[in-house]
Length: 289
Image (cartoon, rainbow, N blue to C red; front, side, top):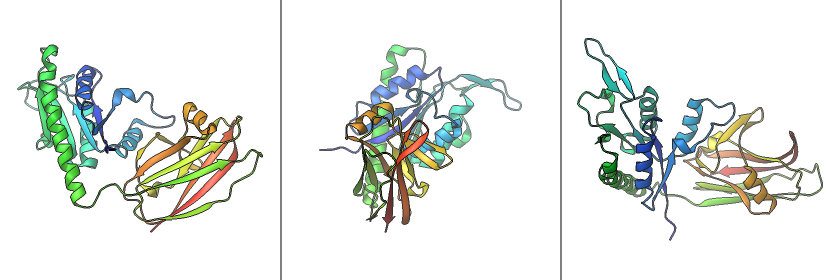
């Protein structure tokens, strides 16, 4: 039976990455969890700011776990200096909490009486930990992750009860011809209750070195196979070298989930390039009723 996996963002400072890896390992023991850890991201896409990339990640994940650690020191008015978390980690926690909701955000923090925690974080599910004995870290992480997964399943059950379960998928197909320069006719398709779209591509031209799929932002993409970028033509996904090779063998695709897309007419366009020049194009018009 196919299990729906909940995508969980995992964030921390560089100094506490070792602790985040322990959390990642514990969460991955659950079949229903897919961890999206910051240290697996690599470089952000070209021409993309960190904030834009975080916002893109927000559209791709369902829950978030952040590790706050005593990386900095802060001094409030009429108070001594106190250990505090990195500003960017606190910002990320607030960003994910605001977008996902308090019941979808969790954080770990050092069990230190003097540790500085923003008061706005009170009310979020949190787990204290000690850094004095790394060998015993699983004694903290394992039960905490079990509680996190139980909360995730509770939220998922509530969504299903409210009729927000995954809806049918729609697979489109594009095949580029061998005669250079020809443009395929556009296709019109109608869909009701669509939540998953795949565009399967087959390329009969070894000279093609870049493949992009442009999409309408109103589709409200939540999870994507690849991170998107933008150019003068619009927002697009691009195929990696491996995916491009698969498409030349006839079995590669673009795939993404939709989060309650707006009704109306939406365009998808697949463009194959040789060098910097478009060689083939295929447009789809998806009418969501």
